[in-house]
Length: 303
Image 1 (tube, rainbow, N blue to C red):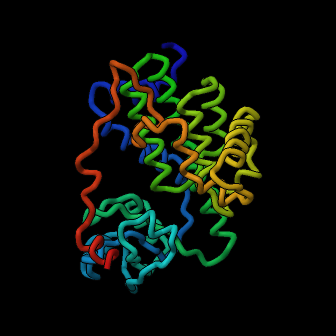
Image 2: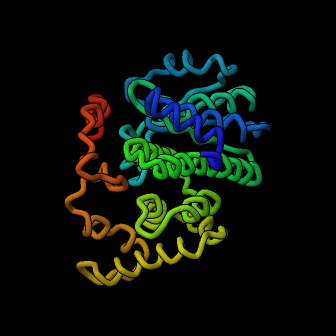
């Protein structure tokens, strides 16, 4: 294994001998590397806040970052956000300094608070600063994707199906919560060392085709993806357009046609869509904790 990245090889050994929880250390390490400077901001929007969380709870959690000037609670009405988050409640937090807002974002984004995984968005004073932050966020995500992809490739090369599937779950989970598409850097790494039919290629392709918005379409156009990847995206797009139950003319109609996404693998559970399975590695069992949603927020949403 002389050609393996030492850090990736160490991450692989940690997965094998310690457990999957070691993968949680990778995002933090990448984040520390990317966030060399500070682009501060005072206003934060914290999504997926439990309806039982009070102002005092927020202060107790955030006062260590700096003085808090104001906390307001609101509810979003976006259909897209409602499908993503269990709770529609949003906390708007205003800190007295930009450094406090930056520190709070680092610690709160992805943090589980009252059984809810939080998503934090910053409010910037200018478009230029917002674009700078977005660029850094994409750099952070691409470095993480690339690390995880190289870890998957190593596990796959060693024919360690269990670890490979575990890493694939981490890639999918990271995208699910961050909603940052893998850029041309990690996609190029994946396509350089995989062949047609690879689950990794399939995941990267589906991520871009089935879940896009204006910003991601703009980034897609500006990126220099491998020609094989672009061919895969176009091939799937055309197959869906021509084989749906009705004529699909718009991009939104086509990417929303999830029935076609599952048409050729109806025997495969969704949780195993991007895994490799065989007699020795059967489908993954259901996680009994996956369906344990917050009762108070579920009741409020269903009311």
